[in-house]
Image (cartoon, rainbow over all chains, first blue to last red; front, side, top):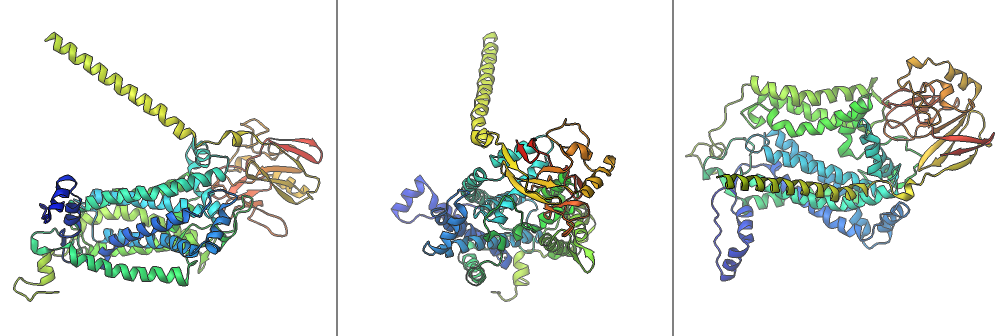
Length: 418
Length: 188
């Protein structure tokens, strides 16, 4: 933690605890007095929102596991029993299934915020990399969870994703068989996916601990992207940011509740209310919305191994961003050129998502979508591996403010803000 | 001096030996945890299925289940057989027959894909990512090659089950099977 501890145990009991396990000191220093830049905006509230999402998923997930049966013959019916017979089972399941979508919505905002304000740059490289690991764990957890209801999309999604490993030369087929525990996706697969789906969220919670630790060493980045220079630039975390986080969390929960209570199947696929049938593939297999951009990349390459490598490469690329960005300025607020390419990248991600949601031979205004997906995939890699290093070298950034306090409060003599 | 060197060497030896032993032990312990994920003895027991194919009409395909996978049995029309035989093997993306009843090096000619030309028996698993391709009939054509179209990612197969277009790398696999009589086959 940055700076010396300001914790001051008052009662004898607090002193007794502090000398044996200084947990109250840790909480005090990280969640109360932690010096936080005074200019954090709405986009910085998603860290807290994500923690909330993880908690909601674990809580509802533990409840669902009390009623769910991980058996290929009974899983589908047990989910229907949760929906119809278990007291408030429908609520638990709808919170859990929509919670996954809300979790990814929040994590994408969180990641794009980090990209825009250069939060991955020194000294926060490890913080970013740990975040990418959390994202990978989230994708794995969501995939395992999507298989559990044992509907048609569950089954065929599991088939397609596990078959990705069969693209590996020589040992690919053995790896796929090892993942399935059979010669096709079946009961053995469902059982192990349930086990892993229960395990991974707790691993995520542990890695989130590392993420917060790695955040609290250098402290928060901020929308200006400049370092904290004096105590004037910061405020204590509590009450300023606890209240700000709580306020935006309430708005987020409002949106969450709209989906749970008014459109609970908005993110779902009707085919998943049909029980898994190994003999019939649904006409259009689509993953959940949060994986669509990667799915579009996979489909746009007309070669099995290359398609899988490109899709994997798109995620692996994220680990290298701290070193691909050569600029000395963090925030896009002061990077006129990078800002434009950043927004183009955001649009490209949406285009990829749209392409992934359509059937392979779809076209818009006469243009086959597969070509749109190919161009978008090309830009994805171009942005990170070519544009990002070059722009950092050739761009002339705008003048940076001298300090956070000066930027927020105006000149030192000006009237106090907020 | 000598004693110190001796002591150091001995200590190094013990250090390396116990370290190596620990690595071997860790690997030996890890293996059961990895291998337990592989198919169980029950799943490994090679299932064989006998199928009565008398009811399959010319131009029709019937789907059976074999080892958890769809099994296609297609009774081909003379036109389908003729068009499959006419294909130049050197123009195919996958030049191998992929037929469990023939040598691994057999070329992907139509004759090497079947036992009797009229009957095409295939594992109905797209060699791309494992979906079940949809059969093409003159009434409802699927794809350009009169065989199968996989709707997942657009792979197209001809009336011999050979990959012609799309991301799939291999021809549809032919399982081991034998004719017990003119209307009965044993698969597996």
